[in-house]
Length: 222
Length: 261
Image (cartoon, rainbow over all chains, first blue to last red):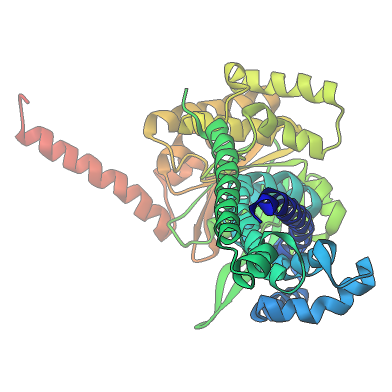
């Protein structure tokens, strides 16, 4: 009975990594678009548009107020429309990306708002366009904070994949529920937990390391 | 070079509207180092920030060179800003960029090619004596060096005027002196018109030839710097001069009592 352990874990880990990777990519892209928009459209921002600011803000809050498991159910038709199925890791990527994007948007918003307004004014004063200010000033200046924020979000997405696993997404979460819980396979339960812990640790470590490297380059004393 | 006519601005606050600038008239000639002095809250910072439209004036006209700044919008305003250099109290350098990249930034915005940018950045870093710091990041520099980078950035795109928003207020007296000397040199070498705001009489005395005194959003006195020191007419100017006199009389008193120390 025990020789299926590695095979199951390997498949589960593969599916989890696949879901985490692609959901993170899409969620980061969506989150950046939302987060940047919400920052620049603010009153006194780079491209002030208080009405747009309010609409985006309300949208973010609405999606964020839904519990993730309900959101997945709500997004099932969309998964079916985009990837043709509502089951499996690929279908889960659709729900995961959309569910995580507003969370990312708020994290990105926080990081971008930390950029000193004086720097933005200096860029305005040299005649930089809003586009230039966003991509040459705002994002590079906020980069270490952004990376730390994205690390939090990718870990949250990892947790989300485990939840999604409970309702048919596959991956380590599904393994823990289907085998560990429903079939009393404690070896599988503990193994999945261990793998998820290691996964989260390595994501955190990578994020910390990258942010620190950038900071060390910018702020080292010689 | 810089003409301001009937410039007014008010802020809306919870307590009602506050008039920060009230019908400002100014005339800065080409090649002048023009100082605007005032106590905190007089409106001097708002005034200088209106000149490149970091603040929007309510009414009035601003002309810099032949360009009517108050009539510009969008891309045309950005184009005009490229020719108005500005330096700040807090330097406002980009921490993510090296000294070289900070100075190159306005040139990239101006759309110059790489080769031109390289020559120009080297030239201007040479002028502010920071050629050896090209690859340093701002956090590795002292306050005075940071302001030199700020000046280099402001001058990179060959502006017609330089606006200085309390550029030396965050620096110690010695560094202030060296930055003022640099600005003076630049004014002499390039014939660049400089408009600066300050709350320090020393700054006016050291480099300005023309000045204006601002109080509660109004220009209460203008003229040469000598006039301010020898014959202050406005109350604000007299208050500034009195500060010096008080120090002087105290010094005499202390020196009189403490003979031999």
